Image 1 (cartoon, rainbow, N blue to C red):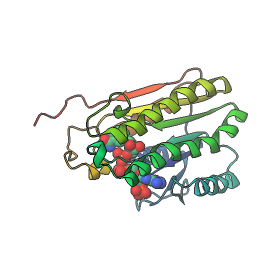
Image 2 (image 1 turned 60 degrees about the vertical axis):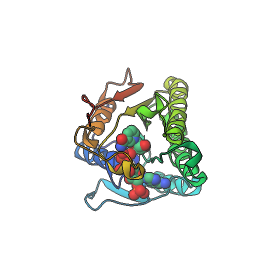
Image 3 (image 1 turned 135 degrees about the vertical axis):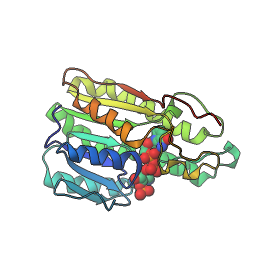
Length: 231
Ligand SMILES: NC(=O)c1ccc[n+]([C@@H]2O[C@H](COP(=O)([O-])OP(=O)(O)OC[C@H]3O[C@@H](n4cnc5c(N)ncnc54)[C@H](OP(=O)(O)O)[C@@H]3O)[C@@H](O)[C@H]2O)c1
């Protein structure tokens, strides 16, 4: 797809992968609507629109998309990026942390997909990218809640790609390995370091998936650092 002048919605643009992707899409001439609780100071220009929205709240998501559809006819791209993780032994996870992960990583994604799918199907085109994690591919000790939420993202994405493809709508699920962002703030054991993936690299892979010709699509995108850090 030629990206210039296409309309994209990205959740979670204040930092990390979503922020890097937003910058790269803007550089390609995409009209970007960033949905999130916080804006980023360095995102600006006539093609960038920030809409305050906590994606855990269905009503806020509905209002945000109403605002977007009041200005544009079509949304061509939805990137479900917003997410977070809490770590530790299952019995030590707080219920509030469990619910926050599922409300953000899974329910928020569901609310956003529901908003764009009818229009995308009607226009017989569109591309939804859901960010899962390599934690959606293997169970990991002390990552049970986050893994469970990202396995749900994998299940949603694999099902959705099969039901949307006949309507000309692409669905890609991205499985990044450890990426150097603020994501690890809730992890007592892991500190971001330079052998991790860079958020710009993960963003670049998504740009490439978006730019692929219309007759095929990237179903799964697994991205890992080349070398694992040895302590
Ligand atoms: N970093 C990694 O190693 C890694 C690996 C695999 C997958 N991922 C996934 O990649 C995605 C991006 O993570 P990241 O590494 O870029 O982390 P990050 O730097 O912590 O960024 C997360 C983004 O999500 C937004 N967000 C969180 N809760 C939200 C909510 N309720 N409503 C709206 N926005 C919300 C945050 O915005 P505010 O907090 O400012 O609202 C922030 O912009 C997540 O889905 C994460 O699970 C990350």
